[in-house]
Picture 1: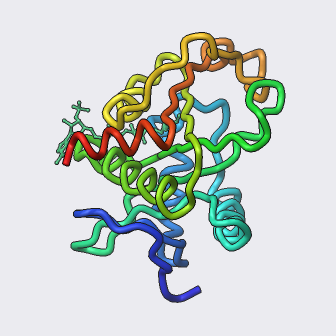
Picture 2 (picture 1 turned 90 degrees about the vertical axis):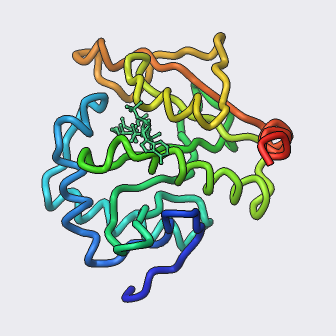
Length: 194
Ligand SMILES: CC(C)(COP(=O)(O)OP(=O)(O)OC[C@H]1O[C@@H](n2cnc3c(N)ncnc32)[C@H](O)[C@@H]1OP(=O)(O)O)[C@@H](O)C(=O)NCCC(=O)NCCS
């Protein structure tokens, strides 16, 4: 693919399909211990390349997927933001959709993750008519739960869970908290902010 297919545009960002030129940024994100602090794995450059190819494949199938987040002004990729199915049947119903984000550390602290996710949630609820979107993170991942709170997602207290795919030898990464927003709540929030 040589041209980026744009899914969502926000004031400063474009969310779209991945280009071969995004490869270095994707490698950087997957190998940086600070970005991966709350994940029990790292990806080698080769594994990151394979995963990137898979992500673009997933985009074509059903529209859900992890999109490149790109600065409009410079066309520079900064990370990704996406919608996916958690595929955790012991925790969430099959049709559940989650939103997630990951930026290269040099782009943290600019509001880009919240801006990208807000654009994607608007798209999810208006263009794709989803009923609700959840997000979850390791309890101590305050940067990520901060994004959830800034977006207006609310914590579902009874849904804290131990992530079944986190190996037992990473006990500090097991416990996750869950936040959610419904389409009606999102539309009400947008109307009251307008
Ligand atoms: C989670 C993650 C995406 C959050 O990134 P972030 O840049 O902190 O989040 P935001 O986009 O909401 O930016 C908010 C920060 O930008 C600041 N900011 C600066 N300019 C801003 C602007 N124009 N608009 C909004 N916020 C702005 C805010 O004050 C806030 O700063 P603070 O962190 O000092 O409080 C990032 O930390 C990350 O990639 N982490 C690793 C991967 C990860 O854990 N992903 C989640 C797994 S569940």
